[in-house]
Length: 223
Image 1 (tube, rainbow, N blue to C red):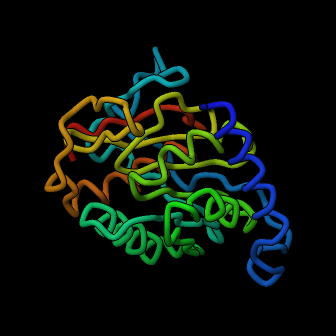
Image 2: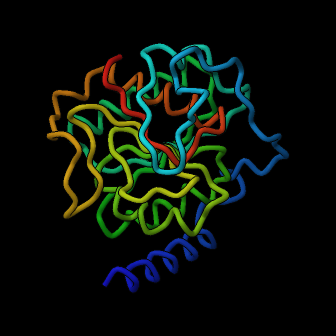
């Protein structure tokens, strides 16, 4: 049933791209390709053996703190669910965006039937990066992201089982949901979604994307 589901997801996204947000919400003005402000510190990855596609890297705590988004960086927060971990992630993204003066807009999926369409609405907006928060979005994103390789995605607090080069994820012990029916690399623990973990996830993930280290999983063993 996987292939038909992918086909349905593709059709739903196509419909959302046609009927989604109006021109006032799509950042339609000319926009340069975003580049990082600053550089990664020692220990983010091993420069002699950088992680390949789908690999997992364990960056040294704080090695991402020297990288910041450029002025005018466009981010859409795509979120679903009102559980504690999802709320913690949303709060961390909101606070990061305010601190970094990021142009942040939020798309919320209100029900399971809206997950795919919400992703379509997010892509319609023309963001530099779509940040996903909420385990409910993992299966829809697994179907959608391979068909939209020009759009960068960052998944925080979860990961895709088989990410393409445009999907970067940040996990830690207690947060590694990979989709329905798939095991986790660590036991799920809602209490692990601390302020420090969630803040580290968004900052480390964005630093990786801006530094062209995409398609990998960052494992925040310590923050």
